[in-house]
Image (cartoon, rainbow, N blue to C red; front, side):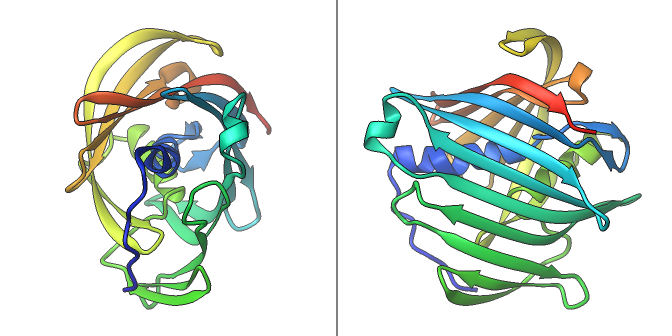
Length: 246
């Protein structure tokens, strides 16, 4: 498997890791195995910087397409230009979510990653390109990209609860993500007041802990997303709007 050295600054880590956080638990579900097409918008704060995350889920003949885009806002646009856009195609069945393809276009981070990956479950391989370099990687069992993992987790939350571990193919390397529940409380955000359940997840060998407060009334759509690193809050995102598009 090809691997890139990762020397990104904390701000650059915010861009990539915040998007991963939102990808986990980022779309509501009406019933087990059936996802709700929607659009949603989040306000993001990172230190003195600000941003906006938009998500969209669209049904297709073969499954779903999810699109996630993050852009800087306010004065942040003066120092950081560009965007991060991710697109994932995936199918669902009674057993869960199966990723089909993943694409990333990052003009915001310093490394400017471009990724095009397809999943072949007959050969258990992920193949494609990372910044025009060819990639072929063996998949050790069911693995998800940074977008489709959200829907796998949602499927499990509405069934018997999430698994304690998930495998994620993060652009060019596999990661194990550990998940746990941290309780319930009522939370008010710009989109409204909701009863929420807390979910934390952390990749193995990482100092970053993601906390997501997911609204029961919105089928566990996350209304607050926070990233802590070494006990300090680095990122906070709040839900501003949500609209089903059925």
